[in-house]
Image (tube, rainbow, N blue to C red):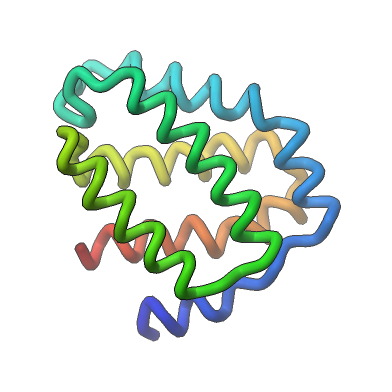
Length: 133
């Protein structure tokens, strides 16, 4: 299956899932910031701690928006821009892979099983995209 086919299979999340994501937003972003910023591997993001925090906030907002009304072209264009922009500022490809894996762990712990099931395909897509870059 191509990345486009896979993305087009991502369904809109239920209002309940969106509400759960909104409810855990601050806690989830804080946990992600702590995990990445305390990583001994600074090559993941260089000296760009502020950019890391901004990226996690922006990522979370994008995910909520995207799974409310999925649109492949928006997903593709946004992810391509993020990769170009952040890599130009010293973020490694490994940063993105590690971050996507950690988001999955955070969501699996903090969301209901139904909500996790609804967002997991998007994170699988992110990881497949990273594999192909």
